[in-house]
Length: 269
Image (cartoon, rainbow, N blue to C red):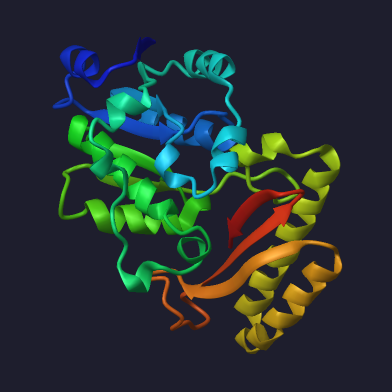
């Protein structure tokens, strides 16, 4: 595996006209990331992984400081997976111009996480814009666990870059909790609480698939979670195609954001 810290050196060494798969990450790699990398390895001749904790997508400085950093462990994982290239750029490499650190969202997109984390997706789109401007991978692999992020990135790049987004399924623990880098910040007891949330939301999803009239019980589910001392930021049903509220039995998804000991977690079913 070749490790790069600058885009210039990366572009000199890597032929992006070839079949290159790109997996952007913020490090603290887990089974979800590993599944993306394995998918890239199966489709592409070469795989490029980036580790970059993007400051412009954190709406709280403390959240940015606390975000788990495990570069040495990450490198070991990537070597075992036989990743070809790793890019670990500095902030000054990605954002040479501070005006490039945010990209505006239109009003209809300011829902779910975009509503409760103002500036977050503006920063996500900005970093993707910078990466795809500076490198030209054929494919980019993104997980459905961050479904809203996936939706916004696909719409943003479709008429701007030739890179094709490959959506990959959410990878979960046996207890149904989604893998997340933020899980490293949780205790074993916290993981149990988070698993409890995922199980309840998953059950509700399948209940709705059988009988969509049960949609009226969404508030009841939220109350049940709150009674268990969980801070629920949002629990909503949205159209999985456009994230609007025009839903039916075949097009809905459930989205949730909640806190456990000040650690913010998201999920969708």
